[in-house]
Length: 341
Image (cartoon, rainbow, N blue to C red; front, side, top):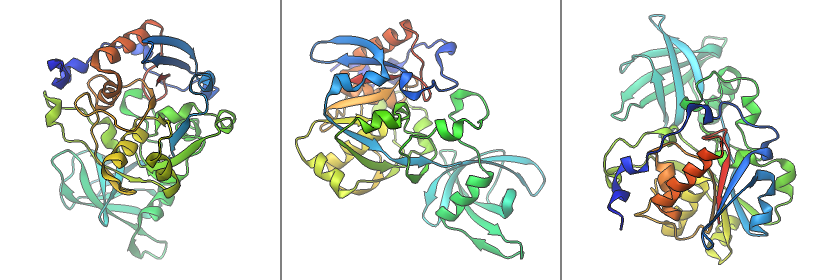
């Protein structure tokens, strides 16, 4: 084993700022696609719309999670401004990130009568809050997740990743969402799926869906030197029985994105149809079920680039990233894609 595989710094690369995609390309399937054939050790450059020419009738697995408007702006009792990013439900409360100083007991006020109170400060920087809503009759009641989502739809903002460095715009409501998004709960998009149009999707004969609600932890940096010490965030997943049948068979599958990959690989190990996925794939923990990986280009030293390296090795991953930079591929959530076959 390459001893560098355990060092976070070994997954670093330099990316020119101008290659960070601030906006999506249109149409979606006009993005660039880098294809790496492992058997032939061959790189092909093409457009995303041509993807089916390279995978034939293999079975695609998609993540049908739907991004919610998880970023809201409000104020404290003192009048100080506050920004809150909903991460996920947590028992009967919610895990959030708050920009602004708060302590246990701090009350926050938002539009449409939405209020929250901080009940716990966690070591990882997240906060536990409870939400309630004040009606026109001035009655206050606690709310469930789906009720909260409806309010967020009216007052919230699409939670663009921090590296995009702009405010969300009207176009993001549709573009930062897959065309097949169905189950609300994600605070980040399964970005490899953003390249699919309805037309391209209709050409895929064999496809199945699962759900993994992408959390804000997907952007959490790896802040240890040795990747074996990294504690992976967990995210809720659900796999329909029909999809599980495919996963239990010998069918060759194309995992569309890192979220699908982690969910499928977690199922291959645990055989659970729902629960919390906290699987960390890397060169020390390689895939055992996914045959082909479709993914975007990821942040340096992130768990996502380590996941790619679990398929093709760290050196080859960095080599392909350099190739993408050389050919001016666009990186990260709104960027171009790579297919490993």
